[in-house]
Image (cartoon, rainbow, N blue to C red; front, side, top):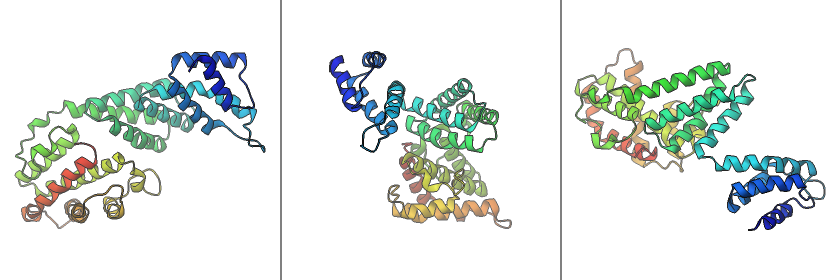
Length: 311
């Protein structure tokens, strides 16, 4: 498509209006920077977002002007990586939430956060899901942007310690979750798997039950996030995940998550074991409570690792 053909294409979209000389100059810059296919996609996006119509189903002059002003920004955002676009989305939410929001400072923090997650072997999809969910949710929970900055920096510090911690010092023999199942996944998940094995092998059965429950809940949340279903497990406040009991009940009818029937049936067993060990005053977990169900747990965890996109 030549430049004249591109101008004709744009004007066909804004009929009955035409481009001014300054408008043609703006289009010339876009034409040089971006591909024909990308510009056509951006034009369609801009029309859907900004066009408003009069009684004769014609776009209003004000909406056409707004569309033309926003087209360069749309093209720029489309040229960014998915993660960078999500970072911009988080910053836009922050600007609306706090009057004294500092875009420059927030941008640095968010990029440091993403770098920390990448260094912890998170995939792009997992990072994007985190930015859309936990990072944005933290804005709604914070009373000020300063509180959000501080909390984010705390998260970054915690993540950096994942790789600094020598998790190989956890001596375990894969008694509940064999090493080949969790080998190669990100460090915090590996650490939980190793702690489950080590605590069981050292007769710390209450510890085993609690961490088994924790790993189950973590992998369920990550599975919902991976499939774009996290809203299914957010409570009425919009700020927190529902209880594990409610998550498990949701899996019973969640066709998009599509867990196997055995996993849906058996998860409640490990939820109860963990709850008893954490909250029942007179209860102590024993080896006999765990040992007969090791295979069931192993099958559940391996399935959830795949559902969460970790394997």
